[in-house]
Image 1 (tube, rainbow over the protein chains, first blue to last red):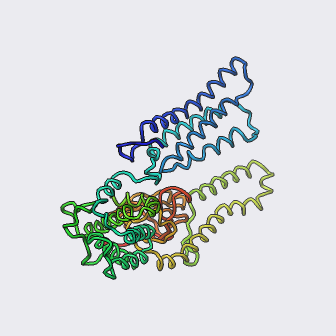
Image 2 (spheres, rainbow over the protein chains, first blue to last red):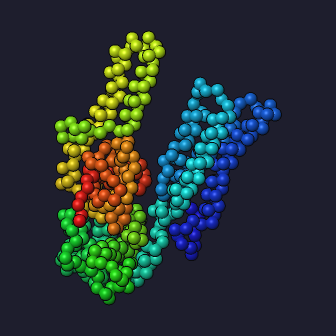
Image 3 (spheres, each protein chain N blue to C red):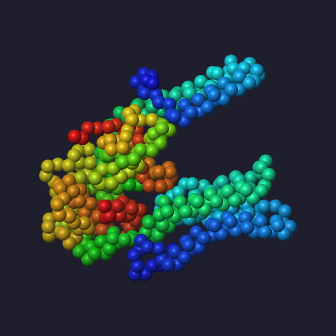
Length: 282
Length: 167
């Protein structure tokens, strides 16, 4: 995928857009174009069969399937069109070959293309495919790089482990990992805010592990940590919101600490980026 | 219909197929003596069109009933926002409001369940024990899976869905 210097990494580059637009145009072009060419050549007596129309539909099916494949949200109907094109046009059949089948097939492909465009979102970027950080998550990680520069590699690794295990739903392990950082008072490798993040994650993980409701008293970040947090409590929100917001902020801070402090752990964090993006955006 | 402690439901599609072939067989037997001579095996075959879906529904429902206590013991209660693709295979319990119901008539219901943190699809591969409607507050027990097994967004493969009283 082409670079997108300076732009929002969630957005496709212009050249990507042009390629995708070209491919979208290629679907009606090949499917109906093949039929048109077959019709003209048959009328002039240059060919005797409808294979050109069938070939156009087959090519259009593969293009449609590719367009479905590069979207983060997959359309299984569009993805299986190459299989149907082979069943209809390549495998031997008792049907008498005519233009009706390619015409109906081409119409169906184009309906599927419209459906794909409007119901299955835009094609994926390197961000949505999990190859690089993007959007507001990247901005947050860049913003917290400087304040988190003194985090030790061990603490950063523990932050990655805690985040990854939390994403996987291994809450008991998350509580244990957080305990190793905070429980022994061993917070030399991280500042107060990060230590609080581990404590908050530990508290939530312990509750989740036992499926307990949110407690009457709970940990939150201190007001002086506000600059390091990804999300802030909008005015007028209830206790519940504050409780869960603290968890979101704590997890995002661990993600940032892991990313900025332990380069070898980045592939693990990248693969959990959709979860971090979800925490960031909701 | 209840067999043992299992509520067996036949989908409207199975009933429609049964009705269609019953009418078809009636007409055919009126007009064709050859068909009339075959009725001895055609009528039992016709009833198999109802019995087989019922038997399959009974088997799947009783299997799900057996799984329910296991999920009760193992599933963690999570908010919907915490469910992500890294949790595939994990048993979960969610509570929320049913926003949409699809395919209930096919005995393969799908629900869109939402809590304050988000919404998620809940798929069931057999009929539910009770009829669930939009705006019902429910507790769902199930396993996180990908929508299309190997790809797609995370959804909950539902083992049990029941209405709860949150008032």
